[in-house]
Image (cartoon, rainbow, N blue to C red; front, side, top):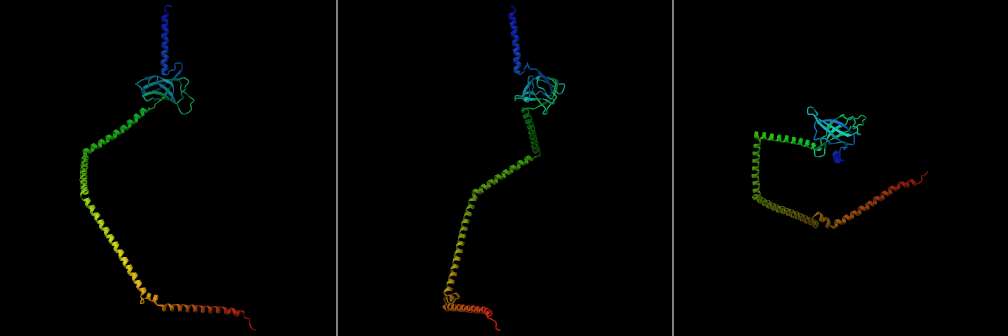
Length: 299
């Protein structure tokens, strides 16, 4: 009874220590009641990997990094030990990969299983083959650095070419040619501006006057041709009328001589009678052999 108070305090301290230990491991994701198996791998770099980092298989956490030991007198220098659930078997050909964990630069371990079915598994404590899988940030850094290197090389080449041009005097000559060309363009622009303001209006006026005169000439020619054509047609019509009304011309005689008209009618009647006579003769000639065939022969 004398030491009851000290005993209670000791028991309370042990209980608090156990709760602290279990709570700390729980927060770290360690299940101290589950048995585990340990496996090891060698890496040249740790990439920020720490103890108690997660261990994944196909994205599922199956354990924690148990230890990280290093020996810089050998290559690779880092020996990483991981503990995973005892019920998980790792087939032969499984790789222990060092991967990025999140965007803040953390690292983790992931087991990459072989694609083929397996029948042989690693024993606890075996050493696995390792690989390093670069994360998104590292990939961006590598790509950015390569692009930056190529850009720097191009800039260096450009500066070198520019220095060579300056030393050879070609750049100075080119600048002088450009300056001379600019001056010539300025003078040509002034000349064109003066031509536009001073001479162009007069030229346009002369062209307008010439076009007006040409239009007048065309209209005169057109009128002259029409008048000449009308006069020729009138003269032709007058000559035809004179020929028709005059008794001395051929057309006048044909139209005005009635005797000629009567003679033509008489000749046509005589021709018609002659044709009728010829038709009657031909009919009689055709009928005569037919009558002879019908007459009987005499004894």
